[in-house]
Image 1 (cartoon, rainbow, N blue to C red):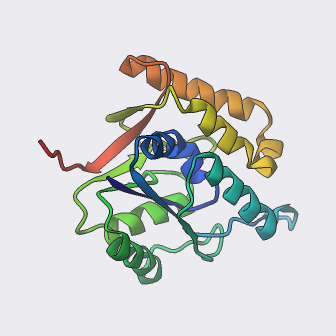
Image 2 (image 1 turned 90 degrees about the vertical axis):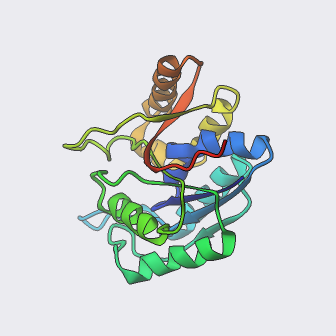
Length: 213
């Protein structure tokens, strides 16, 4: 299977579906990631929270922890990633070349404008794709007026350590959110695992899914 994961920022894919991708690679599937911006972050008051060089270096190390070597990082502006022809066609070009069997992306009701716009751009670009899943948002984004539907579960029990190691490479984010950030990621996976009858899991909401029997 060829899996294409599309995220707005360097750390979104690791948080949302890092375990799923690590397990897919472990089982011999082909994975490609697309990140829409280089993820440098300047606060509204002008304070630089993460430089472009820092974000890209952290992202590269994080993806490597999951076993991901094939990835593309676009240079759309952080906090202002559009949902328009430029984003749709950038993703469309990669989909046409890669020909994925499964597309993973953000949730369309995410409260982060970049996440929401990337989700819509990915779905637009995936108009000919039969299987699209949206990964669960993680706080502080995702605290929406619309509930996320836990429809598809993936057992990540044997790769949770890889997911946590990957997220830990985002040292600027770990500094920002504190050690409780990692604890909450593990706790979320534990809850989803309990719901689905395993130790740890990730969960997705379906846009559509083709079942091959």
